[in-house]
Length: 241
Image 1 (cartoon, one colour):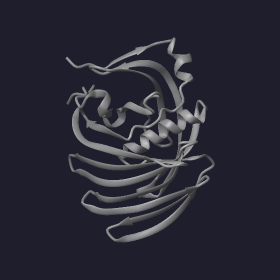
Image 2 (spheres, one colour; image 1 turned 90 degrees about the vertical axis):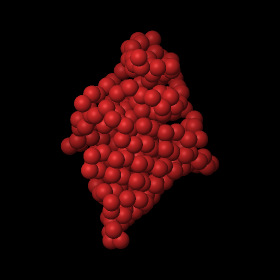
Image 3 (cartoon, rainbow, N blue to C red; image 1 turned 135 degrees about the vertical axis):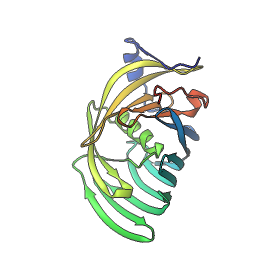
Image 4 (cartoon, rainbow, N blue to C red; image 1 turned 120 degrees about the horizontal axis):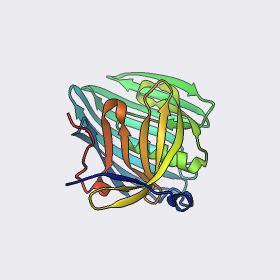
C-alpha cells in the first residue's frame, strides 16, 4: 500500500542548512489533488540564461465548476530567485485571459486582459516581491527558493496576484526538517509555513537538493500538490471524501 511517511530527523539540521538552492531540472511536473481527487497538472520547462531562469509552464485544472487552461512564462533572477517578469495567456472559467507583470525593485506593474478588455495598474511593497497565480506551480517553486536564498527566518515578502492585479504580503517561516518518503523515494526536506495576510496558511516541503518542493498541502481547501518525479505519477492523498 502506498504511503507518505514524515519522520523528524534532528541531525538533518546542519546538513540541510549547508545546501544552497539546487540546480533546477530542465522540466518538472506537479500533480494537483483536491479532496483526494486528481484535478490537474502543471508542467514547467526551464531555460537558463546568464542571469535568469525562465519557467515556461502549461497548467490545466478542472474542479467542479472551475476550469483553467493557462500558458505562462516566469522569469526569475538567478542570484535572488526573485521574479522579474511574468506573462500568461489562456482561459479561466471559459473566459479569455492574458496579461503581463513586470517587477522593478519593490514595484510591480500589471497589465491585465479579460475577454479583450485591458487595464494597467502599479503596486508598491515595502518588501521584495513574489508572485502567486492560481495553480501555476512554478510560482510555488519560486516562493520556496526565494525564501531559502533569503537566509531569513521568518522572511517577509510582498505578494502579487497578477490576474487580479492585487498586492498582499506573506510571511514564510521554517517549521521543521524531516525525511519525507513516497513509495520508492526519500528526500530530506525543510517544511515551510507560508502565511498570507488575510489568507489561509499552507505548507511547502522543500528539497534543497532538487531545488523544488516535493509536496505542498493547503488544508483550508483540502488541496495537495505532488512532484510527479518524486511520487512516480502515483501519489496517495491524505484526504478522503
